[in-house]
Length: 297
Length: 316
Image (tube, rainbow over all chains, first blue to last red):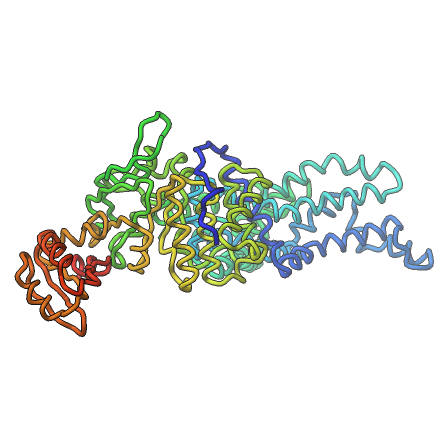
């Protein structure tokens, strides 16, 4: 080791723009899943529904041929595939907001990244390092949320977009493109909106917990637990719409379906209100946990 | 403390870090009470037992805490302000760093917060890690690092953005002797580049080696401040001891007892242990005696003059 002699010179103070302080943290959060082989594997698993739908598209547009022509035509005309019509927004939206496989994928992805985002830093006292870099609690939370949103959006927003592009390319005429273009924007906007809500709530849950495992369990219980309880209550009360204002998952799904123009079981207004209420309630508690003095223990 | 080294922008020289009558309460508990001292372009050691407020002082300077009363300034800027944070590097006592990151990646990431582009940050991170002896390990993940390597990465992230002030919280913990001496050499070299260093440590003899000036904190109050030798000389009511090796030690001991300020002389093997009440008077008298003593005086050195003794006497 050399004594810091020749090359060390104290530098002057240079103001740094706000985005240059939070963007490195958001980027760090976005990349965190890709730093381990397990994380990369999980990310790939999240695209399995996309691969399945791509395969369906290939069958429908005749890219994949299963042998004798009558059999291939029969498969294309089958009731199951008819429900997966690429001309309708359901085909793209349900991949994300359908309870299966949407819920397990959301839980898996957020549990791997978002749920531990703040709890991990709190446990290792890494918050101290970040506070001294000129990033405040609000910017810190925003950066964490932004990174998580970018990551989860790769599956929930970019996935459907890729599927739509694939459908447009595979189709033999412009009908697929012109027929689906009107709902593309609202559909992606709706998906982005609920992804933002879900990751935002997840970051707040992480802020409330001191350990990563605690945060993961709390988040899973909140999402899966509320969905299960709401499901049971919906059956007991014989009113499926009850799920919209009791389950974080169903509330988001209803909002996304509604924005995309897909028939939803409950009222999107209630769903949006419920999500906003949960977010605000958690924020009120979480922001106290990130006051500088408490954050440093 | 009159050290002056910083220019906060209007040309007036101010201390790099200044604590002005700082009091800090955690609820009903007073962690610090009316603490005032300053750090110039030097290494200042922060000494005290666990829980006396050392880390609180560090965090106040880093802007992680706000004082309940008083003020903390970094080059004239309020601690915690963006300017103050940009001008200081903080090396907290962390158990773990960002484990999945590589050493260079971590330091570069920390540099990005100071406005460096990705390319500049990577280049600067490599430069600092190389200077700290991690050049060949910078591409390994931090979770694979030894304790010593982690400490160096912590130091690297604290100094990489070329701060004017470096705060080091227990930087020697867990290091082997060689790594300690290397790290000490690095810290000692920082003031020569115009950097002020505030370092806390429990390893008193090592702290004494790197910090000419110390600040002793006890029960949240500033107990003493200054150079270790000066503090030792000013200890009230405590006799000072010297070790003397001279020819014919018993005869020399008899002569020593006649000198002013001498309380007692003990003969152990070939050396004498002299206890004096007035060190200045004793030294003034013993010097001419040693010069003319037949056979000569081979050694005259103060005993119990170290930081540990001062600390023990003041706090114990």
